[in-house]
Length: 234
Image (tube, rainbow, N blue to C red; front, side, top):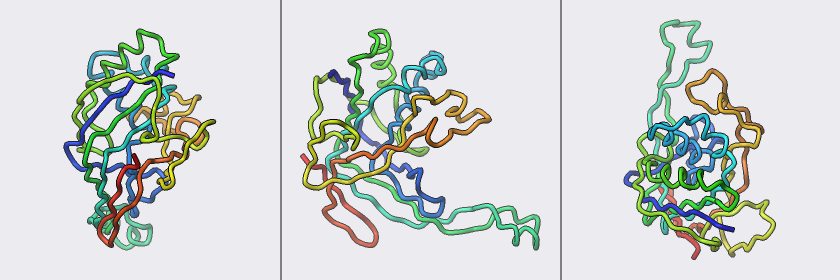
């Protein structure tokens, strides 16, 4: 198996709310998801003058794995938000469309680089060259304002235990301790009009967006009411 590995460093705190979380309990994933990274590739294709809808056909099928930064500190915080008012509130005061509330938000401070491995063994050479160009132009992962800086691209014939793996993989060498998270990916039957943020359709769960059980090589070393500290299992 042949992998293309891109290295990034986070220049701001990272946050990407789990798709399984509620709006009030916005717990973050420990890493970007495969779905989020593929969306970043499609966005980069538009930025360099390519047709993102055409590139979507091969991007959606990519097998993506992550090697998390060496250390990660998740900071818990409560923020004030505006949410749509309930029917009872609107009945009393129709002008009060939004109501002030409090929600949980988590932000991660990383120490070290993020490595993104993409399987390219069955990818056409023309698309491999496009992929290398697209990886260079990715500068944001996660929610708005979570910026990254591209550092390098390398190739490898195999991945070690410091990379994420799917629990459905045929051969798994599990470390003694790790974190399991549900990360979303694009399904085989995903359609561009459904994943397009500017379209009228929304992505359907189980078809356009599927959830996969992913083993993240992190272990929890310290925690308190305000933070959780993880270190990568090397």
